[in-house]
Length: 289
Image: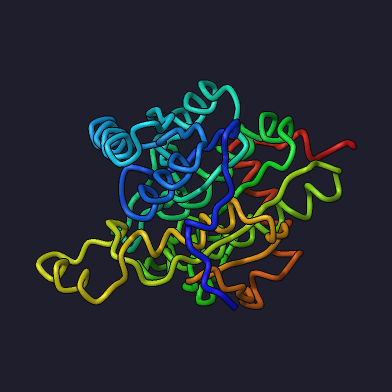
């Protein structure tokens, strides 16, 4: 099999994309390549200054790029709602942003930081943008997870991790939630007859800003692959005509098999209902058809 590269991407003229966390890490090359191939791209970033710099970098690399900045803090549901209200059309949503291995803390809405940011923020954003996605033929939602999901466990009686907090355990849980959500979104879209592909990706061990390791950061970056390589699974999932909804891709766009827990439809359905209750986002387009 020939290795897939962004040069293989089809033209995206007339398509609109939203990429969360597009100011750095794998989000930046993801946004750049989508724009380079003709898509109108919204760089969704928490920090306006860093987001504006990302827009400038994309325009320098691709002078004809149609790119704009949108302020989005996934750890604040009010910010998620405000951002979504400003989006006019979207064909491709790349749920890329995330935090990792953070100290114990809470989002603005009182959720454990990693679960609230990585999962609940993207759950709410996807649901709020769903009316726009459902109106666009061939729309796709790409959710970035991690192979760390295999170590994740979800205790619905302790979503705040009050019984014991571990940075890696919290991260793995959030990544399991990402993958459960991506697969359940496809199942619900299929049942509702909505033309939507939901795909999950694992970028591999990539040199991004998601994890801070102090003075060792430069050394760690030498041992990890560049963000552009980590963006390949997301770009493949977002654009390749060979992709099917419900698939999960890893480095070099290889098809991966989710861990057993991620394949549990019962667990996914419960997580969906709990997430809808916590965020107040109900995905009405996926019910009642």
